Amino acid sequence: MTGNTLKYIRNAALSLLLAALPVAAEATDFTAGKVLNEMSADERAAYISGVVEGLAYARYKKDGDETGGMKCIYDWLYYEDTTPQDILSAFKRFPDHTPGAVMAAMVEKECGS
Image (tube, rainbow, N blue to C red; front, side):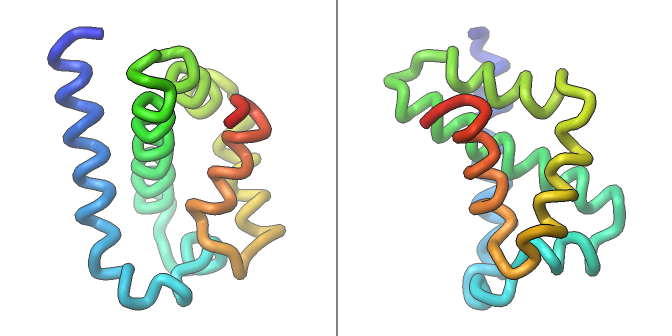
């Protein structure tokens, strides 16, 4: 990986964490249902991409800076045509769960833990 790629991933992960701060106080109220019902399509797309960035970076660190698991997560979102719709369908099935938990379960199913 190039230095620019790592910098991009680090900045994306930091942005995701900072974006979650105002929500942290109401984390139990921030659900997949709210993502579906209160975010525009553009906001949902950006949010989902941010969650994927966070999950991919966490996987990268968990795997001792090996990129295989991280690549699987990126490929799952960006190269599987049905993944965005699958995520929205899962949000509809589990509207009271946190969106990150729903997506983490989907990533674990697709890419292992």
